[in-house]
Image 1: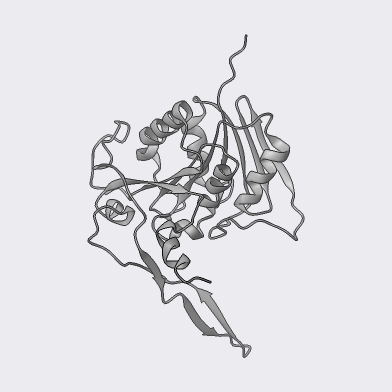
Image 2: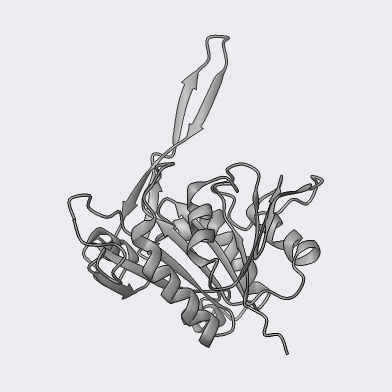
Length: 267
């Protein structure tokens, strides 16, 4: 009887050609069969958006033993939905978002297309994980992430995750002066912390400009502000102090602690 290898469905919000997703394919190709369905170009900030009024197109970019790469003109969530409906030969054992070029800690979780991928997989009851590196550089060095990405993937494949829970895994930007061997597990970082989202917000988000042709236009830019920088149990603190941050994230966003207060309104 043939034993099937695990099937991994991978997507991102940086596009199928991004270094992060291609490094992820290489890191995991010996662990399972991989199907990639990712946006044809960058779709950062699309969160869980999907295309309700725009026709979608799929294009096969590569097929080789154990790996298929597809692109879609839609959002990251579109990619997951289409892959599950049209591409995968069976139910994936795991959905993975990333590796994202940039930090997805704190409130960025709500904006991130990478987390959109992971939340969509989780809503389909598939164990799902997002991997992000705090480096927006197109040529970012993802090699130090290899040991932990492999360990986490293998652990989730082996043990699964609680129903309705996915993982948001963020890696800090490694100090280039650190000469430790990134292939040794844990050597590239101070350690791993399982932590909560930091309370934070984006400030000064809109910049107004004036076009020479006489009209105004705006850029969405902004600056992130950590509103509890001393709290040592948060993802922001972990990343700022050289730790990998793992934040278990759930689909159920009910504020249970507020239910009694709202019930007391006697509406």
